[in-house]
Amino acid sequence: MSTSIIGGDSKITGQNEIDFVECDCCGLTEECTLSYIETVRERYKGKWICGLCSEAVNDEVLRCEKQKLISPDEAMARHFSFCNKFRFAGPPPDPTQHLITAIRHVLRKSLESPKLMRSMPSSPSKNVDKKLAGLTLSESCIPSLSLVDASVCCGMDEDCE
Image (cartoon, rainbow, N blue to C red; front, side):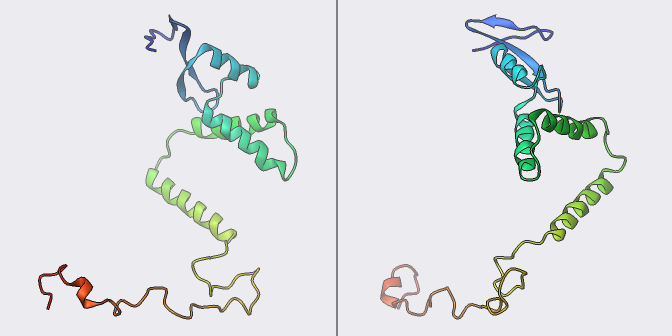
């Protein structure tokens, strides 16, 4: 189904009308059928929300469900507030410094809540009994390669005896 849209107006093609619509949260423009646009607007009290923002709102409801129950309207208001901070902030004055600051923030956040390191069985952790913390591998997990029969390898190399 192809549609040519001129000046934001929709054109009827066969069965469906297609139109461009802009997300009220993040500003993303999508091409959708009018029936789908209407369904989304009914769900979100007249506001058009793209799929990414819709998932973020649903995630906010689920994430806050553990602490306190919030309504979808409150979750949507929180997401609008979050998006508006970034939409109207403009580009940072020094992008390199901004990137360094963002990485520092992520690193600090990850260090504040350390996770159990599974790759290092002897690393200390809070939840593991001290007797179990010193476990190490007793033997190599790589089988010995010296047990290979030379007659099997003959023909693979030109230097075969």
